Image 1 (cartoon, rainbow, N blue to C red):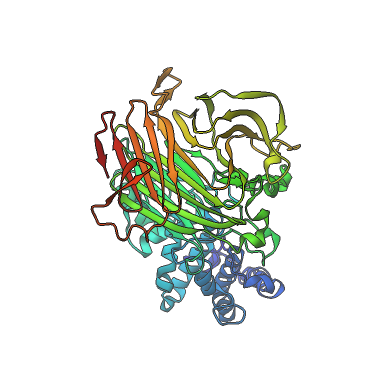
Image 2: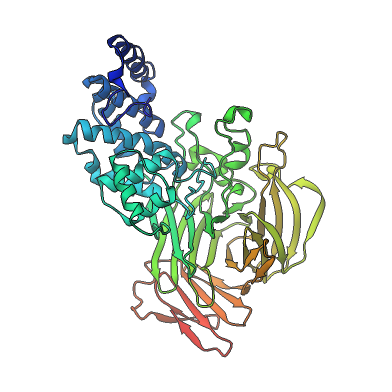
Length: 609
């Protein structure tokens, strides 16, 4: 109904072509009846603060304007109680989004919510301009549209946080509308122009015409929303999403996304609105047109009726939502919060630091407490633009502390073909599930390697036209497990995708990992360059409550020492702008800010940053 009403005139399309009888039939027996269904028959759902509730108030509001019914308009804007707080459009704007505009269910459902929001806002602006809707709550409409668009990967796809499609992108109608309206109603932003060039379409309206003319007048370029922190929660107090972006020398935008917000569900609402995943401190990495560290997304074929009626498949609960289906650490083969939504809603992460302008790149770090009882977690992700590397190097330090022994599984999901390892492994001739519960029952155990203490592991694979290498230190030793989704899936509902698990045991642990993108492969010309990366080993020097220190060893014998502050900002406040020198077990390093980088050449000459 929202989509079929012409908001340009807030009237029925081609109304002047209808007879009086036809107009009365449509207005009385369709629009008014539908509006009454929402505010009377389904009154208990009308005022819920949720994207479904937003669609309801938008539909009733636009019907009210078309019918010139002030009572319907008032219910839509201020809720059934008329207070503007318990329900209605203004309550949705006030309560649904964080101060940064982020929506708790994630970008997939955010783009679904943005469409009715913008359409009813445009109606209000034209019919009741005195409400100044686009300036409401310090331009919350601009902020939430900006937050949604800023989440997009460089190819336009949206990160699959919580229940989400892997292919949904910025050509969704809601984002098309957002790009055009924000350009007209707020400011002619260069990034919006770049977005429109990528979308290759605009919303058919005066706003779209304005944006189209601007987009055609400049040279196409990639859209880049830069390094961002998007806080989650009504007051921005419930974690959020950290996004790093660096454009390399080939003008390709590299992106890392660290998720540490609140659980994407509200157990007070009915089960159909339970879209949250147990994915605390999940990491996605993107470059060269692909997400090379991937979130599985949801288990659903939307509107594909032969596949479970287009509904969520059973494996969405048993696999897709589980922690092991994400790029994070699983403890004792159990999902975070024991897979309980009500428990998960009481926990969220905490931003530790975000550094957008380090001399050698960017960094973000977040904390998560009691996602597993008695265990504290910290994940620090650095994207470093280093001399001699064509693409930024990603350093991932995942620290867990506990008073008790646990099994820790560092999991990441990728695509492409395994090329090589620097360790021997055993490939199983017969496949068995990796575990019995919490998603492990849906992973085939394909191969395993024993890793001795103090060893570093290297795994390389080819994905598309690029080579990727994962290099990680396992100081306590452990296992590397090669797995693949699809076990215990009698109806072939799951995609068959590879996963790698670095497993170790202990009380406190630091997974020190590096992701290097290197070389190119062109099958048409049968050419391959730099199929082997420059990082050959990762060494964990040490970690405690103050700092984590790792050293990367390069093939040319240079070394790169990286230090991350685990007590930022309190520990580093006394340090001068020039920084300070510290010693750790005979290792001397330079410290400044939230993280520090130090090069060492073979002849021990040092450059510090």
